[in-house]
Length: 152
Image (tube, rainbow, N blue to C red; front, side):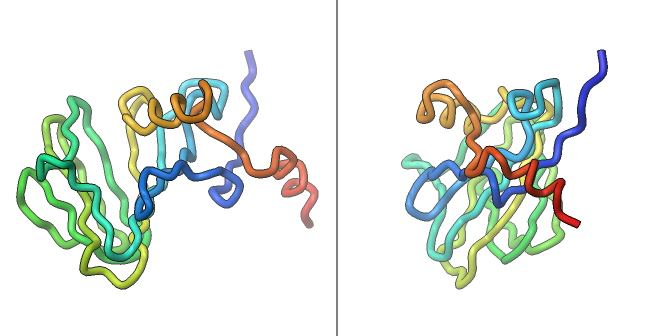
């Protein structure tokens, strides 16, 4: 069985608003591709924001998560240790690492990618499905790809 390649541009994917300072955009997932792929999400933490839990900690999960910082500077708090990160940094978080993003002192948006081996390992996948009636992604323009492929 032959599978067709996929072209996805984040400008055409609707972000899921996690809070007034944080959003998450699904860039790749099995549902989007139509076959098993590595899950990639684009996150944005606005200046002055953080996603620390009410318990003063961040989420912890069993699976490895990889962060790639696209732009901006912020702090990732990893098992209570505050680490300043900036564009082009890559962090590999083994399962069991408590983590959250602190951009409360930032003056610019902090943009990053997270990578997961399977979409179901990312809690945002389930949050989007619940909020969006069973789907984990939405395109802003369903004809976007067709329009892009016609560009010369």
